[in-house]
Each structure stands twice: as C-alpha cells, then as structure tokens.
Image 1 (cartoon, rainbow, N blue to C red):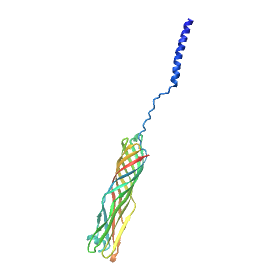
Image 2 (cartoon, rainbow, N blue to C red):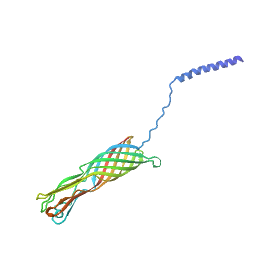
Image 3 (cartoon, rainbow, N blue to C red):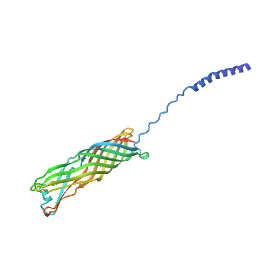
Length: 271
C-alpha cells in the first residue's frame, strides 16, 4: 500500500515539474493585448470661425434724383423744366465685392439637437459701384452738368443667424441684422456766364440686411459657404446747391437710394 502511495506522489510531482517551468516561461513572454480603438469625436459646429469671401452685388436703385426749388421763376426749377438741368441720372448697376468675416456658432443639444445659432460680422469693399460722370444739357442759358455721383465704397454687417443641420456637415441657415456703409452722392454744373455750383456728401450710414445660405464642413476645421443678402441703407440727400442770382433764391438738391443685393461665396476656418 505504501509503495502505491509513493508512486502516486512521484507521478504528481513529475507532472507539476513539467507544468511549472512552462508556466514560468509563459510569464516571461511578451503580452499580446488587443489595441483599444478610440472612438472618432463627433463633429460639432460650436466655436469661433474666421474667413474670407468674394462675390457680386447690384443695386436695387440705380438712379440719382435731382430736385429743384425756387422762390420765383427764372432759376433752377425753370431751367429743369425746360430740360437744361436733369431730374434723374442713371448709373452702372453692378460691382464685384470681397472681404472677410468672423463669428461664433453654438450647436444645440437635447430638444434643439440639430439646430445651430450664432453671430457673424463682415466687411467688404466694392469695386466700381456707382460712378462719377459728365452729362451735358444745353438750353438758352447753355448750362452744362459737369458731373453726377452715386457711389458705395464699402458695406459691412453684424448679423445673427439660425440654421438646421441637413446632415452633420451641411448647415442651412437664415441671417439678418445691422448693415453699415459709406454712400456718396453729389453733382455740379456751370453756366455760360461763368457761374458754377456743386455739392457732394459722403457719410457713414446704418441700415439693415437680411438673407440666408448654406455652409458645408468639408474638413474638420474648414467649411465652404454660399450666401445671399439684401441690404438697405435708405436714401442719402446731399447738401443743396443754392443760388441767389438776381434776387431769386433757388436750390438744386441731389439724392439717391442705396439698397441692393449681394451673392457671395466664402471659406471659413473653425477653431
């Protein structure tokens, strides 16, 4: 009996001896762990952005109007009535436009998920918007209208915008707010006896802008946008040209309306 127990013990010890070295060797081998795949962060529109834009603008109102008044016959109004002075002069109706913008957007979560709200400010210069030209009007007194002016040099806006995500990378939005520009209007003429009159007014003027567009986030930090805006800066009236020849007080006043349309494309970098 004892010999059988000893044999069992010897067999168990031999098995352990064969297993333990293998276990020790396995512990010394390098670990082969499966790498953990990090999830791709969800795209978010929340944050600041800056960018550039370029496009085209055209005026809703292309004319400069000239209103004459007088205290008695024989002055500016009489000359205008017989065709010696213009009542309206038309100008070119289009201009290239370009500038820069900056803003901040917030993508809502929860009940408003898929909605983006924000604010954006921009400023653009206009190339060749409006004109200064020479126009001749002849009559008994041979007055010559030497120039007329209607011009907008720049326009900027500060607008809120609200939109919805058609897809995680495509935002469709409406926008509106303040518009600011520097409209100029003026005119001048002379008559054969050697008398001349002129006026010119240029001022910063505030109005409003309204429009909409779409923006596509084609890379994590870059987006392309296309936008339409209607702007309205109201009517600008220059200081009147005043005459008191022959004791006849009369005035001749140019004015013009500044409103129009902008279509543009832009590139934004998102922080």
